[in-house]
Amino acid sequence: MIVRALARDPARPAIEYQGRWFTWSDLRGWASVLIARLAQSGIAADAPVAFVPRNRPIAIAAFLGLLAAGRSVRMIYAFQSPEGVSRDIARLGAAAVVLHGEDFTETVEAAIREAGIAAVVLEDDAIQLAVGSHSGVGFRPAPEPVIEILTSGTTGPPKQFPISQRMIAEHHVGSAAFDDEAQAIAPPALLYFPLGNISGIYSTIPPLVRGQRACLLDRFSIDGWRNYVVEHRPAHSGIPPASMGALLEANIPREDLASLKAMGLGAAPLDPALQATFEDRYGIPILQSYGATEFGGPVCAWTPELHARWGRAKLGSVGRAMPGAKLRVVDPDDGRELPAEAEGLLEVVSPRIGAEWIRTADIGAIDPDGFLFLRGRADGAIVRGGFKLLPETIERALLLHPAVAEAVVVAVPDARLGEVPAAAVRLACDSTPAELEAHLRRELPATHIPVHWRVCESLPRNPSLKLDRAAIRQLFNA
Image (cartoon, rainbow, N blue to C red; front, top):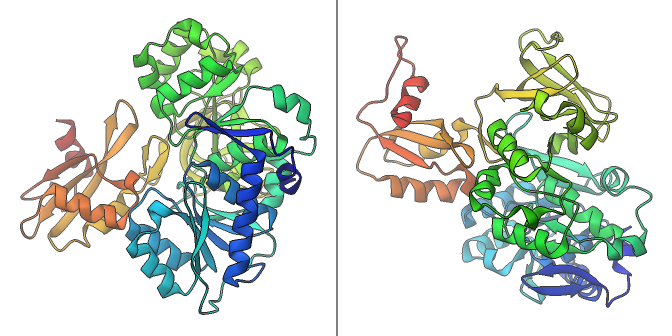
């Protein structure tokens, strides 16, 4: 499918980025150069490649080239410190890494050379082999080409999860996908999810393979989204749930959004009050969905028909099971299925993955009409605008700093992101929150950095002398 897509009319527009249209000739040229650079490195034809993508046309072209060549791709999150990227490179065991020039720091280059693997660097309009493969490093081949993605934590601590390219072809692109005439005149798709996560993959690959044009944002912004809607007048669009408050504050004129028949939202829960306010102001239904990398995408969603019948009656729900998917709520202790309305651990069957039940760490309830309501997390994860963060991960990283004697991380409500991490620490010697934050940025992705800090002479404890998280949370709420 991708080889066929790359063979399109070279003059045809493919991706608009920062006011410039890139053609299929641009994408095909970059994809071909990337394949040539990897061959030049001497790595095996079936060797997996690590990829540190940013939302740029050249990165999308590189990704298409990797998939067209049948390579397995191991994604690395770009928005973290050089030390974090270096740890991922060492951990993933790929034969080469593809990354942008801005991420090819001295620290990362040293890690690449230490691992004995190749490095291909993406610049604005060029692709260069920066480090040749020189040690014949071993790697873990997959039975078939896969894309390994770091999960957000729906089914436990984040981990690398393989998504087969066959699954993307069958379930996300589809067999009746190549009506080039219709796609050429359709409004372009808007791409803003990071290319390295499941939402980025299933929002980017299918439209391009089908021949639909795309508008690419480096990161989501209200202004960028509004300009896209006003210029291209799509019938459907969506935004990250964490941006709904900012969208309402922007007070965009109703006529600017008049083309929209529905808004799709996923990745994180949406405050029902914000949903009601948006729908009342613009008359556009919000269609929420629920999914995860481990499910291969969404398994539960609203449709226009469901919204027309149940909209306000089920406010706060993420919808019903999609065709082929199954949902149930079970007792966390004995695993028995619970009746309607009862809260418990959510389990899912995703037809993209298989027939087995997948247990999540999400607490949910399913009403008698089959609508799913999410009630929080059983593992205490902090859901920061769609990113699931385990407090223990941040605490362990804090304790690596020599000045930290004790550390507790809790969730604090946030009007824009839903909740954010807050850290209370007891110090063994002098330090400051700024120094601790700099330390964390070397250890963890940027999403894990606490927004609020408290330095305490002693941390609150309960009668059993365990750290009292409720009391610590109250420190920040006060």
